[in-house]
Image (tube, rainbow, N blue to C red):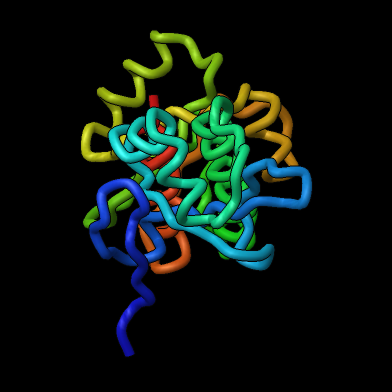
Length: 185
């Protein structure tokens, strides 16, 4: 059975719901990101599509069959929505044993043929980032919108400037969401 697809309200391209976010309107005419509330419209997780619907709010209003919607905080709302999904996925991956934390443990990690990604906290020093790039050049670095304290708290630890995530089926969704989040400017 194939993946569920929807059309982006901005570019009209059909794609998997994994690369889209669903917009709906609550009773006070505010955009919410929910799959359960009322009529919805889908938008790609690309800057161009988000900018397009922000520039032409009537297109989104027509799709949602609602007048007077406010889209001025849409991009920030999408970023926050994606980050909340990432938080849940980081915890799931940690419980599955797919997350290595701590600078020394990450530096000693030797995955052989395994692909990895390193989630970097927003307040990580440039020196530490360069160290990861040199030590694990095959790992993708993804900057998270969280401080080292927040990153550590997600996995029940102290301050963590980085988390190494091993690629596996459960972690692929996390990596995809983080890459979408990093691509939004």
